[in-house]
Structures are given as structure tokens and as C-alpha cells.
Length: 410
Image 1 (cartoon, rainbow, N blue to C red):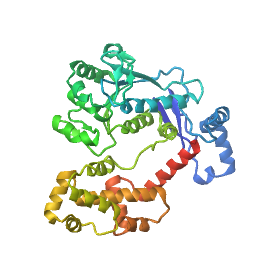
Image 2: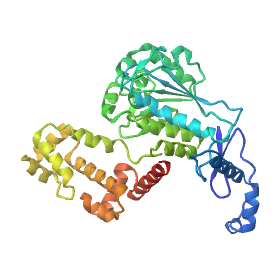
Image 3: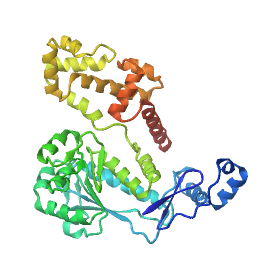
Image 4: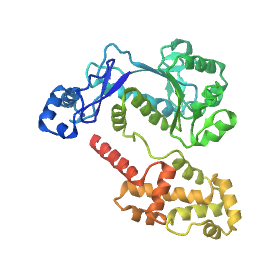
């Protein structure tokens, strides 16, 4: 396992299979800032040697710029962690290939540190080695069957997909999951892969999540599971579950950070052009998707008008008047059609607009709040933190970093 050693300037240095080096002693801030002590520490610090390694790599390999974050140091005595993903007929392809691409990129970046160090050994497991049909038409050929996987699995994940119902009934799969949970260091699921895990009893009493559209179903079928529908991914001791589809990549990044440090996980995210940690939970995605399926003409017209007139009065009374309904009947009908109250829907619409403005403009927060229909910048800030678990300033910074990263790789 890697250990973190704080270098004199606060950047973590990661080493495999060794203890942190003896501290050089306490040095006052004034002394640390002096040229003499800087030179002394530079000569003795591991971090300088690692920086030199990164510099050599950047000159040797096109596509890596000077200053690229340091990757794990090769350790020939350390075996790669084995990551196995369980698949079954009619899986969602991205549930499988998304996390695998993240782990594969970690292998690639880890190899750049020298010595062709392989961080992960990737395997796809199924009830047989016959090709597995996926949601997009192509097939995936498993690496091995259930009996051929062995007991040296570090991490076992279960893919999601429409085949989850049959997979949850398959006694071979459930027995395999129960056995593997006893030997794997950690296990979990991507998207609706939580269903087979829950059917095997492995989520009983645990916090878990799944695709927002299936969260209520998971809770109904398996009441012992503590379903958290708004989470991108959850960790409950050694059990990890992710939300829908692309959230499997978020989960894989978190596992990479846990195994090899945040700096490598950040570089993996940069190469995949995805956020290392996305702002907010699943609720930001489900609101508009659900609202799109309103069939009643009056409600649909109000929905569209509200989305185009966010600064206007969007109270229940105002929306009901536009729909030609009483406020009470409108509120009841809207909730039946969307699963949310009109007030909640309006807040989500406004937050979505605010996110777009923060991401694509340099408007001051007060101007953003005005254009989105919030009473003040303070109201916008409070709702951002409550609903998305991030401040508007932090969100804008993350999006700016993401855009600079994408441009630098293009």
C-alpha cells in the first residue's frame, strides 16, 4: 500500500513498500523560506528527485508537459491489484467499459513513471466465457467464468443493465457474489448492478445508491438496504455503489485515489476529460428528465413557459393561473406527473440555469441570481450549497479547470 510523506513544501510524496523517511526536524517558517535552507532541503528531499523524474518523463514522452503530476513509483515486488467486473446478458455497455477505461488509464500513467509498472490487472467475469450481449448491440467476451476467477481479487464490481432482473434471480451469480465478498478487499456495483448485490443479501444494512430512476424500486424490493438516491457514489466500509451509468467512472476515480493517491486520480480524470469530482448529486439530472414526460397539455405548457421565464413570478398561484387550474389542483396534478412539487421544480430549473451561466460567463453572482429569478446572491449561494453541495465560486472554479484541461489536451 502507498504511504503519504509530507515534504517540506506541503506536497505529498508517495512511496510503495517503504516507511516514511526520518524527518529532518522542525524548521521555522522563516528559516524554511531562506535561500540557505531551501538549498539544503532541495538537495536532500525525495520530492526533488521525483520532480526530476517527472521532468525527464515530460521530455521523453510527447503529450506530457513539464509539471505533470508525479505518478506512483514502480515497485517490482508489488503485484497489480486485480479488478474484476461481473457482467451478464443485456448489461449497459458503459457500466462496464467506463470504469475499465479509468483503471486502464491509471495503468498507462503509472507506466510513465518508468519500469512499465502495472497498477491493475483487469478481468471481466460471467457465468460462462460466451460473448455477452450489451445494450448497444456489440458483445463483450469475458476473461473467465465464475469458477475461473480465483480468490486473488482485490475489487469486485457488478455492472448494471436491463438484465439485472434475471441476474438477481440467478443462484450461480448470487452464490458467487457471496463467496467473493468474503475474500475480496472491497466489492460494489455500478448503476443497477446494485440489484444483484442486494439480492445476494450483500447490501443489507448498508448505505447504497443506484440509478435515480431505479432507486425507489431498489428500496421497495430490498427494504433492508439504506438507499441514498441522490448520491453519485457511496462507500459503506468496504462496499461501494455508484449512481447511473457514467457515475461508474466517478466511482473508479475514487478507488484509484484511494489506492494510489489523489494526484494520479486527477491525472486520470484529466486524460479522460471528465471532472474528478462532479458538483451535486443525481437530483440535478433527474428533475428535468422527469418533467419532460409530462403528458397533460396544460402542465406541459406551464413547464415550458417556466423554463423560458425564470425571472418571472413562478409561484404556485402564478403557475396555476397560467394553467387555468386552482393552486391546490395544479400542485397535486404536477406532483403526480413529475414526482416533485412545483416549487421544487422551479428551484431546480433556476439552479440549472445558474450552473450554465457560471460555467459559460463571467457574470457576477448578483447578476446570475437576477437572471435566474433568485431574490439575491445570498439565496443563490444558500441553495447551491443545499442542493449541489458546493458554493457557486467553487463550481465556477472546477468548470474553469475542466475547460482549461480539455483545451490543453486538444
